[in-house]
Amino acid sequence: MATQIDTAERQIVVVKEARIRPMMGNQVLESLPLAGIPYSMVDPYILVHEATVRITPEQANQDTIHPHRGFDNIWYAISGSSSTGHSTGSGGTMERAKLEEGSLLKVRTGRGVLHAEGLGKDELAEGKIGTEMRGLLFWVNLARKDKNVQPTAQVVQRAQLPVRQESDASIRTLVGEGSPVTLGTPGVILDVDLTEGGAVTIPVDSSFNGFVYLLEGEARFGANRSRASRSHIGVLGPGRDLAVADAQPRTRFILMAGKPYSETPIFNGPYVD
Image (cartoon, rainbow, N blue to C red; front, side):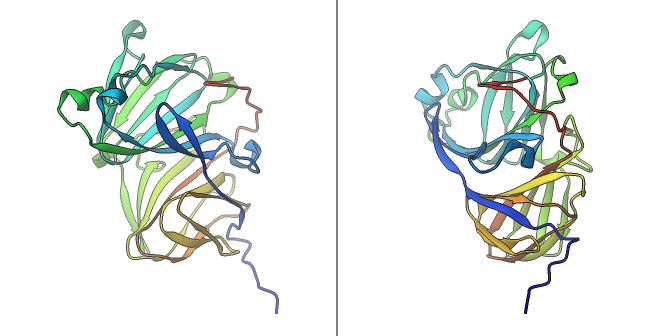
């Protein structure tokens, strides 16, 4: 007998494992961009990196300054803490930002900004040698009409991000209703934690592209109950709700969704024009 699929629920149309990419002395899990996932499927999301940064004198003192422009750069501290710099001060001067566990930094790179001055420099000064910060970095595109805006930076503490309980999941809203963080297009970024395992159904605007990225554990996603586990990205097909079932204990994932710009960005290393 054929399986009936509820078209109100989104299917998972692609599941891929993040690739490992060496970057600035760290091993980075890169789930976007990824072969087999064209940008049109995940528009407006450009890049997703996960890494654990160990605070050492070598790490904190290396020159990691690099330029960006044309997108929102969001750095989320999954665990631990670290610090960084960005040239969003008066006249383009460097400012420091401290990220504690559960907080995030959003830099709207706009027409151009320098980023990542002294990664972990403040922790080094505080004597926190050997501590680690596990972080997730997102690049989210800006509309072509907005790419020349003034760069800005915003640090949002954990307590400022709303948390709700839905079925078996605790859901922290990084971007979306109740969060002070907005993108250049309507969207949501949710940190979904199923500590005891179980199931949850999460509404997703039908006009949004979307995907999940697994931080821990394993679960079945979508109307077709596609299985994904640690470091997998699962891209959502058309529909409304995202159903999550048979989650193992301590399953945790990030749901990212947004209204696509339907513009073709021009990728040039750290620049997105």
